Length: 159
Image (cartoon, rainbow, N blue to C red; front, side):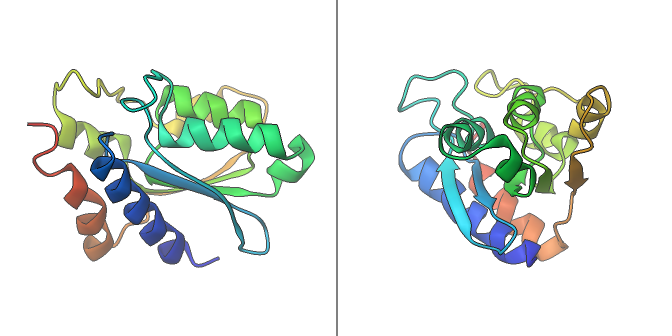
């Protein structure tokens, strides 16, 4: 699959998320043929949903629409490494593959101690390793140019 193509769409979603008053994150779900099935930005603010991270929202929508067997063959793309909550949602939805642009550690550098996004410094691979599913995780995969595009919506946002 063309990881960069899907991550670029996630960047667009994160920009749309900021424009709508939410935090700068975007995620989408792709089937094994490369079709985009579901997209979501962060919806925490506008929906008043404390679990409204982009990845969790995609996982919730996917679980309502598709079987767990089908979801095992899908890939969730996201601008930033899934947090603990989002990783759990991905796990329980049975999404078999995750691709992310920047690491949770990089995100923590961007957000600092901002109370709008109290970030865990725990890689999603560590959380998945404690479970019983062999979810494939790819990332961070951002080239310097792609990383810059992912980071751009965050610049000044957390100040």
